[in-house]
Image (cartoon, rainbow, N blue to C red; front, side):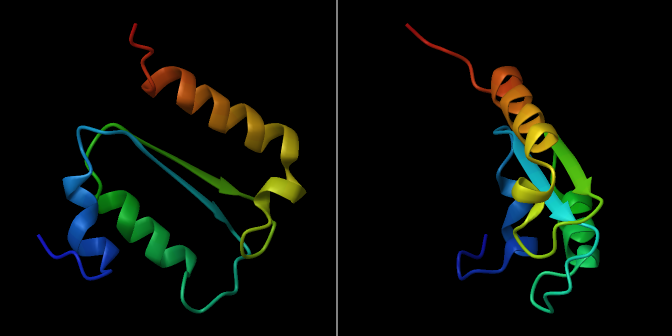
Length: 85
């Protein structure tokens, strides 16, 4: 496994830990295109979740869709983070 910053080379090794992908459909940042998110999601093993916000640009989905963003992230945490005593 490469560990030199190539997400496509390492994403399949995250499992069995859950991973959540959040991206905005209108992200115009050339280093993080929507097509790259789709490739990462496809390469990731389960458990995994994906949310493509309709808009928000690069890193703005939280502000553009705060209620839905918060709900999705908290639901993901509740589903995949197990409390141990």
